Length: 364
Image (cartoon, rainbow, N blue to C red; front, side):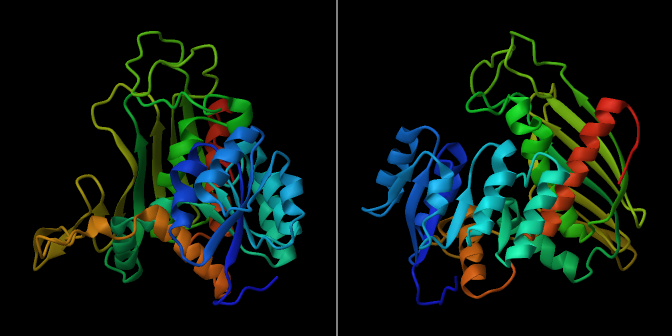
């Protein structure tokens, strides 16, 4: 199945829940050369609602994703289901001749992620994973500086995704069987992806991890999205990892949905290199030594040159993610997020969970 730049790209959505409605479908709707022509969800009413809001008038509705995949006119499938089903739905979609955008994380473990990568290579179809934080203005600018060598060799980094009390109480987020974990696999994955991407380092050597169920059973919760059910909170509330790469670089990863801390920061990275450093602690900041003096540099990423213009009116991360993905398919080039990279993210997360469970070092 080939697509020319003049073609309308036909997309099927598998999983019409929160992430599909909050990110994928609104972003795709803004692209002129895209039509969402099929919607699938195990709850039919959700697929119907998605069709009415985002689909073409004759868009099809399914409760069985395999029926959707039988439609040979569909070019691309977006997989927006719980983590456990990412792998087998993606593999089936690739085998049916579709390109696939799968929501993060790639899979619940490295074995399942490898199956996805193998299927993409075997079929020649494109596969990418939904790490939209790479498309933020600060992330894009920092990546350019890293590639230019501004920081030198990055040998220490900190990947942070810390919420004080913001446990998601909807869907299956608290269900370990369906999700494979809690904040580490949910939001820690974004911070880790950003960090590895900036370092351009995808060769982990070993890791040590800890995971806590310290606050799950509390009834005095103060949660941003209302109280969670302690009996259903089967995943960790926070997790931490120390990762050593083959070249000796180290990464500290911290992730929480609930932690007694005042400084909440999500999907950010701090980088320390031989020539300079950078962080996202108070906007994007660079530091280093110039003319034998310490300096700090803060790029102006928001357009404020005129009262009537604001950079906020331009594309957001979700829209940029969707556009570059569709353009990658049309122009037969690599998407921003490669499945090989996402597989390493999954391998490290898995290693941290295994280390936390065994109390031992996990070696890759």
